[in-house]
Amino acid sequence: MGVADTSTNQPVRANSKFSIGSVTKTFTATAVLQLVDAGKLRLSDPLARWEPKVQNSSQITVQMLLNMTSGIFDEGGPGSTLSRHIVADPAQEFTPRQIIDMAIAQGPHSAPGQIYYSDTNYVILGKIVHEVTGQPIGKVITDQILKPLNLTHTSFPDSASMPEPATVGYVIQGGQTKAAPRLQPSALGAAGAMISTVGDLKVWAKALGTGALLSPTTAQARLHFLPLTTFPPLQGSGVSAAMPAGYGQGLANLGGLLGHDGVVPGYEADMWYSPSSNATFVVLLNGEIITSAGLQQVSDAMVVSMSQIVLPANAITTVG
Image 1 (tube, rainbow, N blue to C red):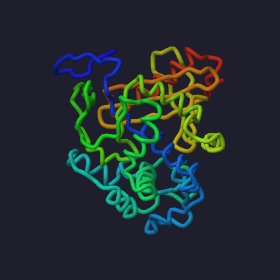
Image 2 (cartoon, one colour):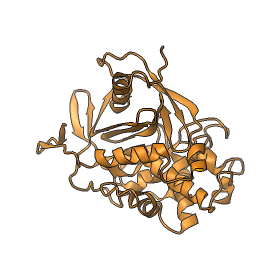
Image 3 (tube, helix red, strand yellow):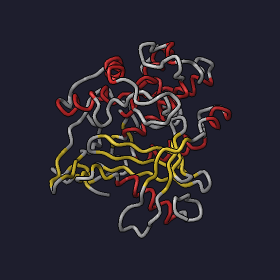
Image 4 (cartoon, rainbow, N blue to C red):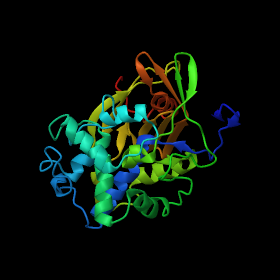
């Protein structure tokens, strides 16, 4: 299963904790949609109700934040102010207000209605949940999702420490392997701060894919996917076809699999559920490979290859 810490050769265990990056968005979106079910939010509510200073806020809705069509600049992505701050000082704390203001200063990436993946959308959604409920997004997720599903090894942390049994995240680049810096959860927030295990994500993948915590109407509505990108297979796996990915409301569709992936320094995560076969794929890595071409998202490629090998009749690919 690999090594959790190269300095001690501590092995990875079934209950080892990993940062899961943007898989966090599946929890945040579900918390938002639960508020929709409770009548405390509407998908059509304009962003101007909470963030009037965001450009185009009167045209941007809660639904657009969920499905990545707001056009708001991606703070935390390449070239962003937040990413430069994190590189300079990984231990720096941020408030949602600071991150949103950075995005406002950058200006919109695109007009509302065009799909563009942005972490800022989910930082804003976390802030909206806080304002609507009076509780931090981490507590809402814990109370409304983690406890009902008994996901006792999953957390929305309040410090940079990795809970035990911990893994250390590594970056592999230029023939060297180095421990990645631990970021403060506030730098990732409702877009990517959470920690989990293989076992908990197996449970969550099925609950997410079947809409277990939502009304049937809301669960069905989140399954409207907009084309986003394609994921290539793992080199040397014997699989040649890529799989198309689309984005719904805090939930992606990868060739018929429902779930999400995530990346934070030193970690990659993939979590997918196949409704047609009742199968689940979870890949958690405490290492990133960076080449001259950029980050090689190995966990994505592993799922693309594994799903076509294990479920050849169910996987939807870009090559016939």
